[in-house]
Image (cartoon, rainbow, N blue to C red):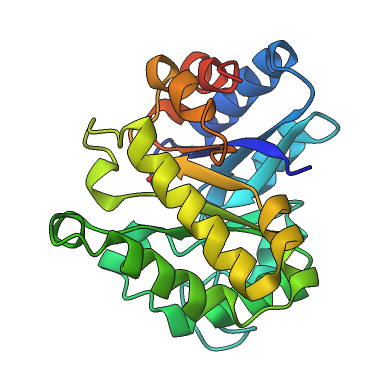
Length: 251
Ligand code: PGA
């Protein structure tokens, strides 16, 4: 059975003290969430060490929002997968649309990043999703298929067990415009089929596929009720512990 997960993506928000307080509030409220639901907070790199202390020994897992496509060395300003792992984080988000759009993250770089993350025992939340123009041109299936193939088809079925996919339509991120449950389910089921055709039915059935894009407590229930939606990657609403936990309670 695949795992249900609600992951908060804090993006470039909160100072370190604010982040520590937010993590403490999430930990305090996490007891309300049914045991079968995985909870992850993805914080800025500067917050990983202190937040690791807060979540240690609790059910809340820790993630980075990105890591470098190089192992180590003269890459000023980058944070390697080994560095992320050494903070105590178990996860990293990779390929978020904001990284693809503003920081030139290509599928080729993502393959390197996923390789390094897995080599350092980090689990990966890999983001895919079409932008508005692509959706309007009805190219969303093709775009998501290409992103999935370019990155994930470079990995083995065993490695896929350490990877979660987040489908995030770019037009729904931070816009308040959520994909309808039907729109999201249609793509999630499609991604699962793409995986089944390449890796076989078992890998596809076991793959956790999260929805992201203006997910909030009021719409999470309908989204999570879909057979192929296994949880959410939450941006804005993850900055308030009540909203984040409220989303997790939608299961
Ligand atoms: P949002 O962001 O929930 O603020 O739309 C989701 C994301 O980018 O992961």
